[in-house]
Length: 206
Length: 206
DNA sequence: TGATATAATTAACAGCGTTAACCACATTAG
DNA sequence: CTAATGTGGTTAACGCTGTTAATTATATCA
Image (tube, rainbow over all chains, first blue to last red; front, side, top):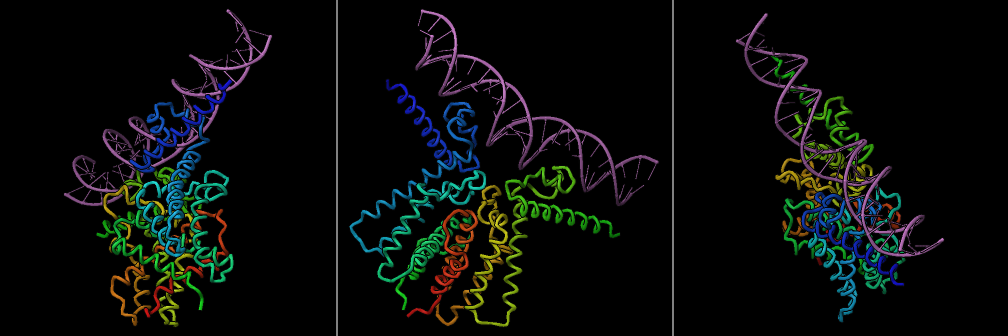
């Protein structure tokens, strides 16, 4: 009597196929070329079919973004497994990973944090409990907590540090992506400089 | 024989009227509601007319953005006139002004730096010589140069500091705008914390 | 007054997100 | 085994969008 289960699986499978197709379209041609109709053509279904799997385009994009954030989460998880357990060094690596991953998938990163898909869906689904974006930020938050363990910082201070640092690396990533014509300093040096600047904020108060 | 001149003026006037209408529509309903047709209706012309004044929507939006940046430039200029000439204090005020202005016009700021209108127009027109965005960044750059006058920083170091600081305040502004549901620390405190963190980078090396 | 240049319009194209109505099929109940 | 039910998918359409070719109206000049 596994009929129902098989059907469930098939449905779940097509759902994933749609997301995958959307991602690969995003990677190739960017958000402006990602339309429901083109996506439908790509997966060889009619456009309406997609609406049986996702409420609307915003819902689909949300799922695409979740997948994208899972790449960040995955890479962060690998950092946590490193033998070098110096928290400051791990945070450094984490910050670099964030920026480099963003620059590796510029078209996707744009959709992740530049587009405000929050506006359409009345529920605020970005950075919510259980989402990948929340997990990604949690890594940052915890890394920072580890770094200041000996500096009697309040929870609020830790939160502010996380938020400042997140904002800074997000800002750098997004500007490097959206302003390719700007006369940037050498990218590697600039990224290091930004990370150095942010790490200083975590030093023990004197 | 001032006929030609009058016509020029009239043309220029309608051009400005279109930009103004676009801005007010942007302020009220955000970018997704700013369509060429609605804009045309608003100014009581046919949609095609707009295309006699702007090459396409991207061109129009660029001009809208230029106007928006001019608000930043104007406010920065006022800071330069302050009697308090401590460069570090002036930079602090400038950074606060940037963030507060962005938060004051969230819908406009989204279009200014979140949308990458660069993609469509083959020329990279954002942050180009002579643009308002370039002037706004120049203020930052110069303020920072003033702050580190006694710290024998190289031009590249000054540039990297400007870029890091710009990225950080842009990142904070844009995340505060696009992620309203995130459990932010108290905004004022957070902004101060971010600015403090960035100012530390400009201290003399020991 | 008639010719010319210019400003603005109408109508259309191709594409978009979305939905109501419908069809075909697999599953279940009688 | 047939009939009813439900599920997954499609067709066709609505009302938008940016953009452009062809056309008209208007104002200036000779």
